[in-house]
Image (cartoon, one colour):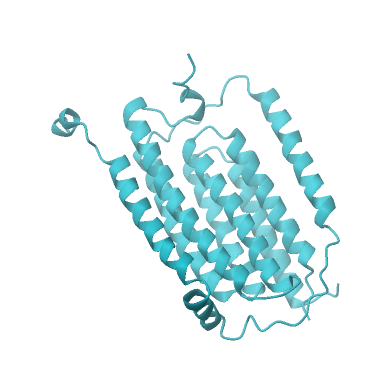
Length: 104
Length: 173
């Protein structure tokens, strides 16, 4: 039987999620914010795969769900980068705190 | 919890993953941050192998440490990236955010630290890819096909968003 408990995997996922959350909320460059969001999605994937092995009823479903999450994350990264490049062309900046056009 | 090779591998991979994340927060140059996160993504692929999900591990290496890192590096190179100046007057905000994230982490940790489902032996590691293929093409065929539509929409949307539609600027370049 496995010698690493499920709580260890969940704790690793929690630490990575917290790092991603802090990075997404404090970093100034939009690319780093996007990649912090990718880190959070990755932490969620660890949870899905861990529960597919250690859950109440182990099955392959968690891994299939993780694959779908990876596909959606890749699409999100591509669209996010496209929006960022369109914004950079118009405003010549990639800093989050200078994107305040909606502020009067 | 006895000491074994699996535990050692888990500890090493988890250490590399967390160090990559901490470097992401602490480095100053943007390119270095993205390269630090590659370590995290690759060690997470190792974690997936430990969780008997070999196919997800390969997909992780291909998509995350391959495609997403490269597209993020392109995004950095295409924009202004040598600006390492700190935002003005953000120390108090950072402290409050750190406390908030720490509180969230502690709250979730209290919920999970002694979680155990009495795991039974699984057969996930035998013919892992075949099992995933069977599930994808029988039980999850509709979400699988919808994913292709989603990827097509994202592809066309990204091209249209990033396209330079300003005629004057296009002539100038």
